[in-house]
Amino acid sequence: MKLLITLLLLVSSLIGAELKELTWKKGETFLTFLQSHNIPQTLYFELEKNDRELCSEITAGIKYQVLEENNEMVQVLIPISEEMQLHLYKEKGEFVFTTSPISFEEITQTIAIPINYSPYQDLLDATSNKALANEFVRAFNQVANFKRMRKGDHVAIKYTQRIRMGQYYGTPTIHAALVEVKKKQTYIFKNDGDGLYYDEKGRNLTSFFMKTPVSYTRISDRFTYKRFHPILKRYRAHLGIDYAAPRGRKIYATASGKVIFKGRKGGYGKTIEIRHEGGFKSLYAHMSKYAPGVYSGKWVKQGTHIGYVGSTGVSTGPHLHFGLYKNGRAINPEKIIRVTKNTLKGKAKKEFIAYTKEVSQNLLDTIKNKPQPLNITQFDKQTDLKELLVAKVEA
Image (cartoon, rainbow, N blue to C red):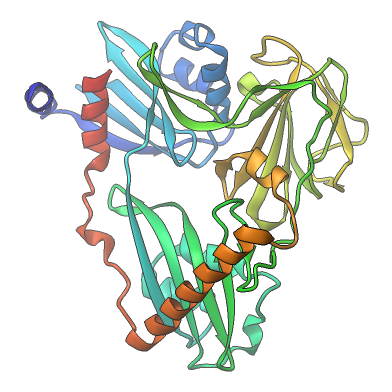
């Protein structure tokens, strides 16, 4: 009841407030953002190491929200992943920094789409969900030949999609899907244990695999999306793994791919990013220096020497901060590196095959029943304003 009363008071005090959704500009950093809004940069430099690193996770093109009162910025929400956001709010005339989970709703549904033109275009026409169409095509890469599909074939998908501010949000999770090619079905199933796709016999359909990028002495900090700190009473996040290792030890590309960034990246210091197949991207931070011959745009093989362990940027000692992303979403590298294998075995395989039999029948039934895709216009478009209000109360 106390929270509700406080919320009502806040709503009444924000009647004249204006909520803006802006786009993070290319080349902008958290420090330049503070400078452009006349916020002392000491706010950044007084943050803890992990929080300063998180400021480096802001990507160009991301949508963020600003709440203004009397043309003055009083709150900002800046997403750094699909789960977490940086939150700035004004308190007693000064801005305070914290992190908080992003509010969203999730829907899980199974749909079937008849083919008229192509799987991508027909999915887009039926759902208006570009991310779903992209992920479907990517998931079936090298598994099914779409060019052989004919009008009257079907695709069926069981997926989970996040919705925020009345719009599709983030990359959907495809749990299972089938493609009909001349009425012959080809299936894929996501294994929750490693996030990779397998067929109905438990064989891995993902050729991509990774190796640990450095010979390390210990893991000094593990990956977590959002962890509530019981003492600080706030959420903490660490979007990667920190491998403690001696300064100067060689760092290697965890998988083959194209170098898409080489340079300084905020709290990450000297950094390299590599784009891999399957929508993956790897990040290597706090390097002391780069390996000769490595440059942005260069194609490197798995195991290529790309740099040396250091402590540039925000770092308390020599280590490699290693980040892994799937379609722009930070994921736990340990899950991928530990389980790279061609087939499931033993109990895991038995349970997985039982699961595929149930889900594959569900996909076939969906083609027969032809349920309509969900209309997301029913979802609340003011989630962002409510989120700002609640965040202000909780802070």
